[in-house]
Image (cartoon, rainbow, N blue to C red; front, side, top):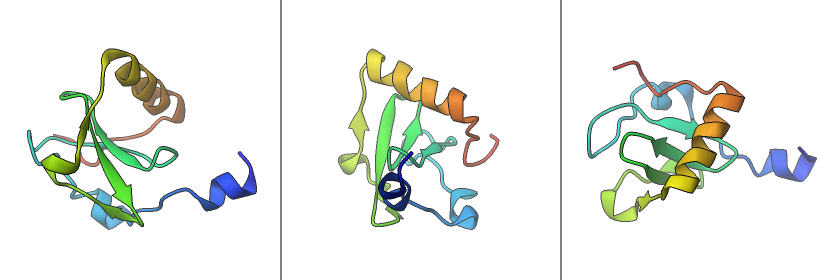
Length: 87
């Protein structure tokens, strides 16, 4: 990862991450910092993080297809990411 890529990573406060839940199913999310989004693999839905602020509105979220779901699951697995909380 280059310095420019590292500088462009979105950061979220760990205390905020610990309480974030999906607005649809109220379950945990995975913060994929390199993608700048929160991901709900159960619903295959992403929530953007813009300027360090999670946009937790259903209307602003995006559904992902199976190929993108597999890609995001691969990132979660490869990076050893943990959910925002344990349900």
